[in-house]
Length: 340
Image 1: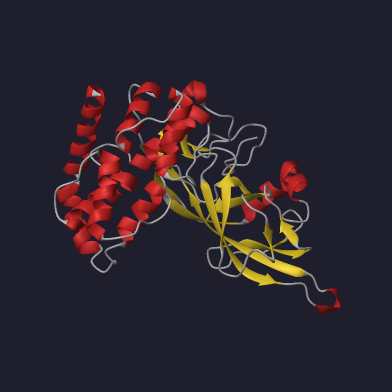
Image 2: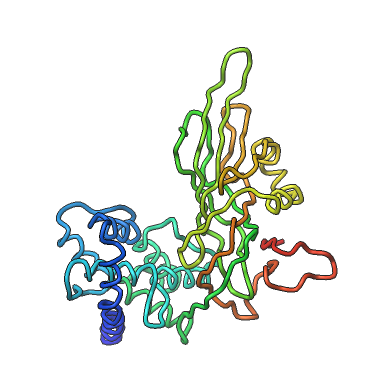
């Protein structure tokens, strides 16, 4: 319990160290943002959905659950400090989400970003200690990290090149009966992506797409249609970057026999569209079950992105094509960052 209290106090002072400067910046930059937006986002990350009730009580609950105590300062300062701690980090420390993702990857070789943070900590404790523990969530995570990585988790700045190809799969089956125009569709990365020796996207990171057209089967045998456009990839540091089906991802899709076998008419046989603005997608025509759960698809980044990555120890480097590694004599395509 004494060590737990020391960890909690250290985290508490880390949050305090970022309060003043970042809160004043938020006051000037986010003055038009509705006051509940930031808190609702943090609640969704921590609990899986926004809370209900008064702002002050909800803010206090999140602080107590994360740190075991409430933060000082105004409501704006407290909200800003909370958001920064969870998503951005500060004072040389990675964000809470970055640390959780690395702890999961080191333990399970995947991340669980679709789960609430409370569930992610419980899952890590179940794996490493046999059962979930009690106490502030941030302190519990730090305790687990101290067991996994005695030197802690460090993050390094890295630029993910444009046209970096990422392999993903659909989480749910899409049919003309269960989706409508405007629905956001969930996919997940299925192979780690590494740039310059740094893990930038892990198995389990999310990919977001939007249903842009749905047509039911029509008269005279005209088939149903679902059109999907890809939007964003979630990197290991929880930042987002735009993706689409472009020339490199089309090449990868054509070359990957596993995708062709798994997707069949769903993706490999789809009518691939060119970029629409910054989003390229695909159009599928056919029977009601059009895009099955597990269907694999390649996408690529639309532009270079500056993010924080995790340097993988040499002995743990997965078998991937590194976007910043020299081209091999065998003629591997540069810019295609997928595992074989």
